[in-house]
Length: 223
Image 1: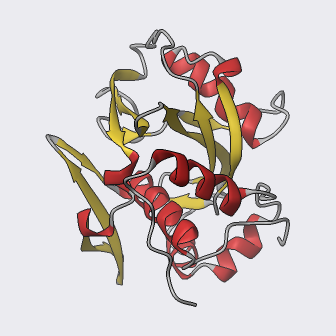
Image 2: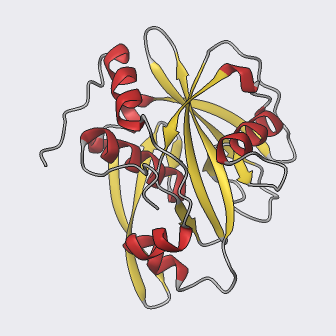
């Protein structure tokens, strides 16, 4: 299938494309199957000594009239996992959560004070397995702008926005090798000004690009 050229200069067309491509997507219900069907997830799973924990992050697309941006957090430097990294707001799915979307909304409200009523669900991307032992479901949502941020400084040092056009432009992707034991995998870095987006966060943005460009399908209740 030929890849679609994304309308990066037109926020209305880009918003429409995101909604069309993610319409009908659902959270992956069978993470074991996801591990078997994703080569990267299968490689990461080999190096985990524990059963992965289900988690969710919100991929918050700020829905401005003139430009779409994606909101990212800079995690506190004292955290046990992913200290100092750039990430999306999120965390483990708790028993009280109604699902991945509910968990992502709760975590975003706790971490950065994002009111859940400002978020409209667009859809889901395929889960990412990270070496800290979490299966992370990316929940893509459009966010009404002009909300007050209240950061939980025990988890988040700061936030910043990246133009979505920048995050979805493959000319901004840099590939590097990462070694897991004797296994070598290729991962992505995305540079934006002084910020380096890498790891699972960069992988989720690349996954969104692939879904929008027709290079990969998002989960539609298949698993």
